[in-house]
Length: 168
Picture 1 (cartoon, one colour):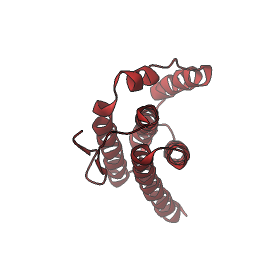
Picture 2 (spheres, helix red, strand yellow):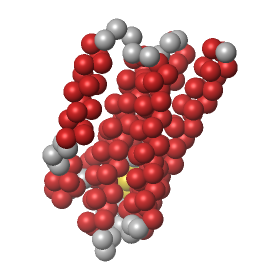
Picture 3 (tube, one colour):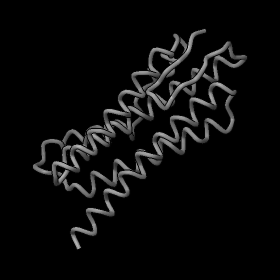
Picture 4 (cartoon, rainbow, N blue to C red):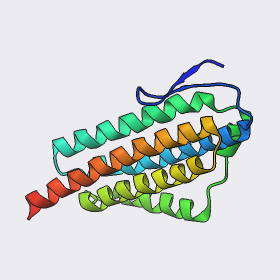
């Protein structure tokens, strides 16, 4: 196989793996987690109170979108099948409320930021769990994506601290 690049910080040498299924499951979970996190970060971006906040959140979203875009080509038919799962009732309900909230004027930034931080934290936890029980290549992908998600979560938490200090 060839060298695999998923954003500058995600460089792995791909080699035949005894557990291609584990790798495909990890890639599918990573792409789904990144896509969910991007949606939440974009919502926080739209609710930002300042241009600096909006730009910071846009940078996070662009990086996560790039990571997902770099991972997506690695999905084979098995991985794509995992991505095509049906939307559960909780996801449908969330999508309904998010669509309704999008029409409301100016969603509160702090709530949108909390939602984005929660999504990043949940996604990083899932990826860390996958890394713990995965093959070498799948574990490396999961660990790298988990670290990237944690880094962005921490950056958004620092932004919340700055905002809270200013608001006080």
